[in-house]
Picture (cartoon, rainbow over the protein chains, first blue to last red):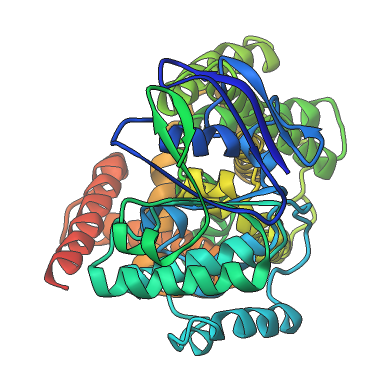
Length: 221
Length: 284
């Protein structure tokens, strides 16, 4: 369960309260500059609130920096280039994501066990990425990179998933495909998930709890 | 033409400076931190090593202490950048600047120390083999480091800090680790080189960065290797190639170049390689 108590961030979010139950899927909408991304950044620890507390499954994470929250919160960012490393291979990207929230030791990062897991997860995408583990991510299309980002966010367990306008940088056809993948992943993973989207079609396809941010406050819709 | 003896010297000096090139690779390429501490940490290593030798200490111990001293210089730069929020370039410059005084203190206010008669690593002969063993061990160690989970974390902060942070990597700590490791290597390189040439001079660190960087980009240019394990080796090979190139340039009577033209040649070499690389990228 995610609980935000009286969160204030600069002038963007004012005295905001939110409770999201375990396994719930929530859509967040709002005008540009309303504070959707700020809300996500506050949960992930990229931005620290001026006041208020963030509690995840009973643990107060308010004072933890982003890297220390990585074990419980995983992100897919709007820009596929920001969520992956172009100059590294698909395998290296997945290796980095695989160690999220774990202690990075001096043992070789490549292993057959991990490769099998990566291939299994990548095959969900039906993009043939499972046979391209040694390819550099900069050679992938935007849609493929974003799909890889989604896989990287679920490759190890986390309590909260944050999807921040994951289709905003993609063309309509690709974005439908990515959204389909995201929905499939959600259906199988049963995670607490927050998603920001502007796409009306995508919103209509999903029946779930909806929140609107306006004037720094959250409203149910 | 170069004699065999001269070529061996190129090989030995190239291998020793290859250690500094690995250090430069760690900062400039791996964690993407333009670290200018190196000119200071090189002399720091040399100073510590020469004072140890002068007082009759074990030469390997002297080299180890040079490594530790260099690491501390890197730690200081890291703290300036990460915790005191001083820009990366400036923190390196400040530390290198302050190192000058520190180094003079260590050397007992003598701007140079000669130890022709003291016992060094190279006293017993077999210098090429000894250097090769030390450098190979370091190449293996750092090559391995970069393919581990820890090393992958280190590399990721140089590419995408936001992503690294999301994946649970402590960017601040990793930056400091990178700087410490890099400057420890450069300090050790200074400590080893000063034993090799038999004296230590307060100005001998000038150009460590440029020579190291030249080695790294020569290696990258001539040997396009994607295997992470071999990339560290390529830095050392680049350093040896650089020495041989410089020796040829200075020794060829046709060009009419002399030893004092060294910095000019090095600079032109770097510019030429960097320009050719950009041209390739544009034509792709």
